[in-house]
Image (cartoon, rainbow, N blue to C red; front, side):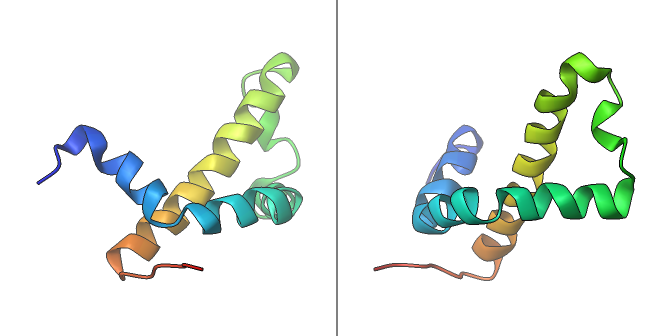
Length: 79
């Protein structure tokens, strides 16, 4: 049994192909939808200097939530 420290790594490893495809194909789509639903200035919350960091963190959070859902429902994408 894995310790809770390794839980995030296990989730990413279980669907690494999904992560690769999503990062390369959906990055603009996810960020555009976050702006649509939360406002155009949502990434400027901490100032314009941190806009790329906040945008990346928000996008990764959406990816992470997708991976957690896939893990809880035992969805695995394999070749």
